[in-house]
Length: 590
Image (tube, rainbow, N blue to C red; front, top):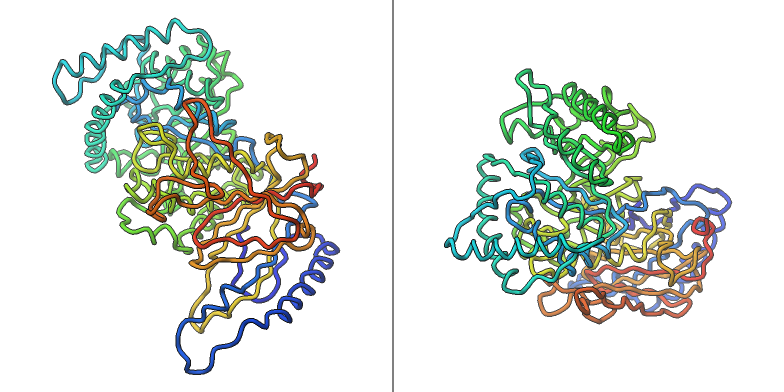
């Protein structure tokens, strides 16, 4: 759990009485030592005024981790991705075969790729290869040349075997960016007016989507339209059955879900699907999957309920009561704020970061009351809804929310977190339209390389000023710990990874105590690059700017070695990952 540092007393978060007692004794000695040696700090004279600069700078945080047993064991695909169906409409689906884009997606594997979002419930499948392309704004010759290029690219891909990749010419990509910019205005107008047009997903579109997932080492989770209704308002499954049969014929390994945020259908399209009907729909979909031999054991996830306010909680409760056993994991969605935020400080509010814990608690309470132990996924999460905010949700500042989401979700046992969106839609994406990684991508890449699915309890003791009457000092230092990823062969099993978010505007010193004392540490310190500060769209790792070497090569993520016993110094407003080497943690050896 995120560590509360606002109290001067020691806090032990592990179970194990004997281990805690020994640790408390050792920390008490260290605290006494810190107090006795802190003669450099002098209390300001009464009435002297001015800011107390010495105290916060000299505060020493003592940190230990329970290495005996994990508090949670998560899915290997814990950090996963999402693509919005609008990628079909604005044309970017045709470019998922790009070598660079596939390379960037492969960097975050293993992961799920959820193809879903607000436009899931306007998808219509047509089993034909050459659907006439949408002719958007612009002169005919421009569109004809552009579409001819797409057709030539498709023919070239058809001739390839195995993973189908291509390098698109710069001119072709530039034309696509112009087309997508025009179409984004159309999509935004639909969103603001709540008048959505249907989106056709053809057999060729599905082929391209699956090729992207397969090439990148991602497992596709495909959302089906839940708003296709018969006259009696039951779910019309004819289009879904056609899609299932086509996918089975191609032997596509896909998991499934139905609809997106059903609690919001009334405001979106003026229809209401209650929990009883939704449970029947999911039961019917499970029957369909069992009727198609290739998918009789396929996974089904849902109900993708929205932010757990009153209506969403009521719908989730009714769904779990009637169809909790039908789904393999329960899915819901969370957004921290709307897209009207205008300043970077909105991403740094601790009370905003803490809202996720409250929402997770609500969802887990409902799920566990009907199906104790059922896996819960956080789907479609992003720093801001409605596509996010330009120059805010796509900058370094948004990384505080993203890393805190991963840490909080992991501590509370959320099995998978699906990030909206990997590419294309709005300003919450990980990769921009020039196929360049944004800050949240680099945070995600470092997380994937270093952080494993076993979550460890953190113990923290600190010396800090008491809050003034009527005020609460919130946690501006967030500390989480996991076993180091077993996929990282630079570290032997038994290593642990600690990641720290420092929201203070001053440097923080952290001393490793207890089992972590006198161990060699590898530091991966991520800071904004350039003069834009928290608005930066580039990131530096230990002082070096992170850039792709070429379309198929990542930069080397070089750690800085901290000698044994050295105090960790976290600069203000930064994020750091720290691998404790050769600790031989029992929780991480198996």
